[in-house]
Image (tube, rainbow, N blue to C red; front, side):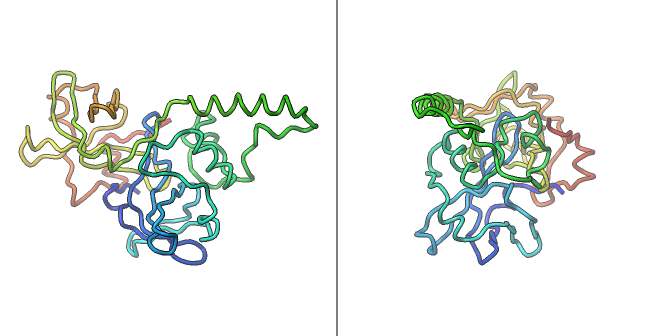
Length: 260
C-alpha cells in the first residue's frame, strides 16, 4: 500500500521487548529511490540517541495504531554501531551496520534489495569478504582489509535525508516550477513511487506527483532537484492531495511503475 513520508514521521517503533522510540526521518538512496533506513529518536532510554533501523527489520506497520513492528530487541539496538545522523552516512558506516546485524548488502545485486525485491524475508547472514575457507597470511589479510576499507571510504554517498530534501527547488528543463513537498512510498518494498511537488508559487493551490524516473539529479550543495521534464509537463502531472495520498489502485492509475 502507498503512504507518504509525512505519515511515517512520528510513528512508534516497537521492538520485541518494548518501545524503541519514534521515527524522525528516513534516508533514501537516489540511485534506486528506496528508503534504506528509518531514523529513530530513542528518547531518554538511550541517552537521547538517534539510531538507524533498516526496513529489513520491519515485520509490519500498523497504520491505525501508528506502530512499526521490528524483529529486534532493545539490547541489539543499543549495541549497534553508533552513527551520527546529522552527517551523511558513508558506505563504510552502512557496511559496519549491516555486518553487525548480519544483513546482506542492498547495494550488491541487481534487484531493489540486492538479491531480492523486498527487504525481507532474508535467510542467513551476509558473507564477510574477509572470511576465507582456509587460513590467510596476516599480512595478506591486512592488505585485503585495507583495500576494502579504501573502496568503502571512497564510494559515492547516495543516501539522502527525506527531511532535508523536502523544500528543495524543482528545476524543469526550462526553469523552476516548484519545490519538494513529500514522498510517496510502498510500505512493502519501501520503494519511493512518487515525489510530491508543491507548485503553489506557480500554480496556486496545486500539488502534483512525478515518478523518480523523471528525476535527473539531486544537488545537496544547491538544494535543487533537476527533472527531465518541461514546466508544462510538470504542470500537467497528476494532481496530488496531501490529505488523501494515493493507495495501490490509484497509484497505478497515476503511472506508478516497479523500480528495478
